[in-house]
Image (cartoon, one colour):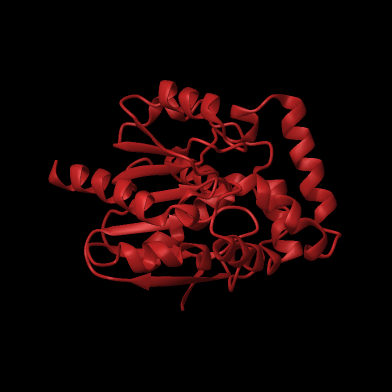
Length: 265
């Protein structure tokens, strides 16, 4: 793994391949290891870069008062230091919110957006009571041993016919989280609302969801598609929230098809 320093934080990342840059932003409790199948599967045509967000993996924990705006600025600084050219930005779940923070402040930076299992922020896509339920759940988990709560997460991320080895691998990555880092990230983005950003997006945008996603269900996907002008919505059949892990071949094929269309244009 490589390291850059951004605003006093060391950010670790993985890089593979050559070609147009594709930057991968993981979700909550995860780090760049979740993208193993994309680093392997897409690096034949693209320079695939997967960061460990501040507070995750090998990166430094941000301060407790870190904000969503700070996350967007950290990503912009990371891109300046580590990614040549104008990148395609792919964000999964929490990572999609970070991508939208980047777009809000730096709309000229992304060549395109690929928003996977995405929300307009929890507060922008979910009922207020569900936002508070999720916030309270994660806040309580940060004081618990991971073996107590990670098994509760996994059925909400995968379908019951997902490869058990892939589910186990994901659980092991999630269990390796930083409590202080996750607390800072939760405080930064748990109540984010990006509905004002979505209509301003003018770069090509792919919305990619699993049909069986119970965390970001079809109603969320359809509303994202309605609010982002000209966006393309693709549903991958019979997979859940972690489509990139559960169905990597189908996932990578959709990413490749979209990027071919963008780069050809």
